[in-house]
Amino acid sequence: MSIRLGYQIPDFSYGTPVAELFPTVIAQAREAEDAGFDAVFVMDHFYQLPLLGTPDQPMLECYSTLSALATATSRVQLSALVTGNTYRNPAMLAKTVTTLDVVSGGRAVLGIGAGWYELEHRQLGFEFGTFTDRFARLEEALSIIEPMLRGQRPTVEGRWYRTENAMNEPRLRDDLPILLGGAGEKKAFALAARYAQHLNIICAPDDLPRKLEALEQRCAEAGRDRSTLETSFLATVVVDEDSARAREKQKEFLRRVGIDPDADLPQVRAAVARQFVGTPDEVAASIKEKILDTGIDGIIINLPATGFEPGNVALAAKALAPLVK
Image (cartoon, rainbow, N blue to C red):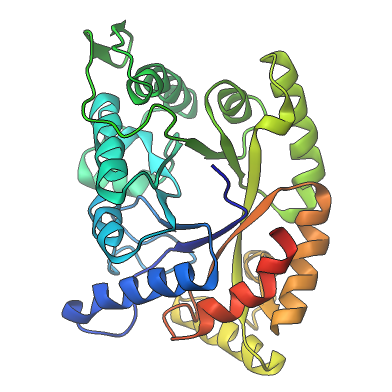
């Protein structure tokens, strides 16, 4: 498994009728595949997230979406970025992602994290619990999921979950990769060192050196060579051949999700600062300096402002692929 360049589809609000929504998703996935992306991701949410829209905006269930994309693509790996562990029984999740692997011809990746969006949990009836609870549940879930992906039959009597000689057939392979997403230097990174082949680190770019140092420590504690755990960073990108037009598209998107881009507020400055905006060369130079030069292996991008526009995914790939391939 290697994901040096990934494309995440984080929203489904394209100004189209619902009947035209999924063809737009397919078009993005195919464009990403043709442009050389290693993987296509969708979010595992039921409501749209803050900073991307209002909760009532369109959001497709991720594994139904990924299975459909498996029939529309032939090369790219397919994954959630990331599955919320709290939304599914772990044995069922192992079965679901293994089925995706069979359907896609061996292209599934299990992206997983502890879960965090309280509004979804409360309104849809999923148990949320405390931060500590969610990571305890994730660790227990991985003790079931990982062996099931490897062809073993785990029996677990845990605090949160129970299995008895749990079977998982059919499988194409016993090395379906696990990608863990998170920012926690103690809990999330320790679980990644024990279970994952890939870690997507979530943080401000300035924090990456400290995060990578902590990851080195967690790998050493687990007796693992840090170089065997691939890393990536998720970046929001607005790219256009014209720099001024890219910045105007960024402002249009922020207004669309209820943020005044000209307001001198900390949350606005933070939202703007976390995005990479400009021409392909400007975006590539900034991502290289702020992300890849810190030691991160790969970059996963989303393009919520422009990704549904034909050609924009390919434009981003043209800029970024030379940095990571």
